[in-house]
Length: 239
Image (cartoon, rainbow, N blue to C red; front, side, top):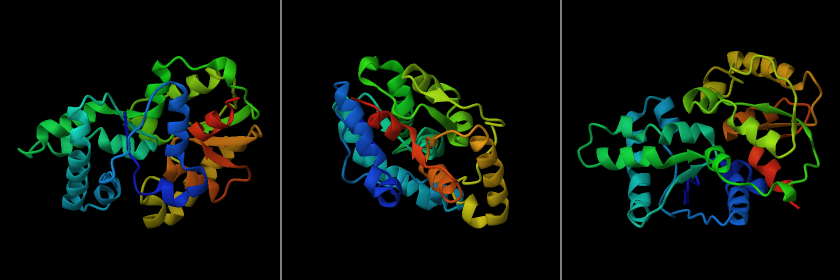
């Protein structure tokens, strides 16, 4: 399988690179990940800023980088940032008028999978997973639950692995990160952040986990407890 390295996670969280953690977990399941050198930004930030041609160029570059591997039989493109996942799953739509890339883009969208979709299908070695932190609160990013329609998937995996999830009110509401929103609409983003953290921390969990690097950074800025990507927590729980 391929993995999208992206342009934010490895820079902003270098000590806990989520993609390296994902590769470590999948290696235990007999799955090898490939990260093509020439792939990069998914194009989401450019799209958010109405720089459409720049976004399309990022999409074309990734397709060119991935296509030789797809021709060799790659079965999925794994994405650990739900914001990027939502973007890549729309490549087919954004490039549908491009005679050179339309068919390839549609194939890319079909192969794009959030890491939770892969782990949901795999038989996890539950006997090797021993949660050291059990009481956690999960923040489901808008791009995961609304954009990719994967509401409840991560939660089901964590529960199956023995984690206890705190009740969280208004899980459908945004945390305020929303791509570039936290920068361009800072006041409103901070109000959304305050509301989200109030709900996440109400039952005093030991840890907050999320599925998107943008949400993780935004939540970390004001949270009174640690915030991680959920896949890092899962990897740490293997014995």
